[in-house]
Length: 152
Image 1: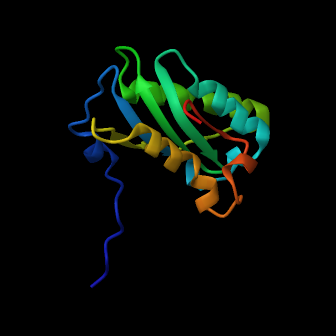
Image 2: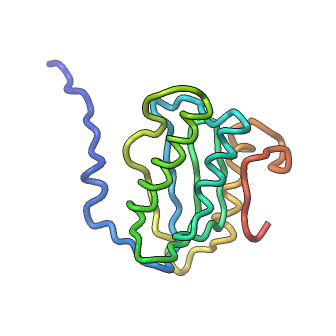
């Protein structure tokens, strides 16, 4: 019997999502087909400038060659979905312009985790910024240029 291909169920993942101003979220979003568009210094900087918006407070982030991990706190009535749509749209336009290319930069959807009160935000920030070390890209986070955390 032939196996059916797996289908993307992003809409199912969004059911029941609630965005709350003042709440912290850990978000991961991936480039289209995991193309390493963010490995270039300037494209990573474009994304850095885009995520530092007035609708969210960036607590920590790391930009990997093909994805973003972002620990943030919502600051307005804009939903998490609206914030991510805005960040992905603006950064895609600017990255494409910089690279002289067209087409999608980001995969549809994203993974998010609402941070519970008992979770340690500093520990989550350490986990986020240590991603390049765990990936074997550098031996210490100090050697990786595309990260920040308000506590570190």
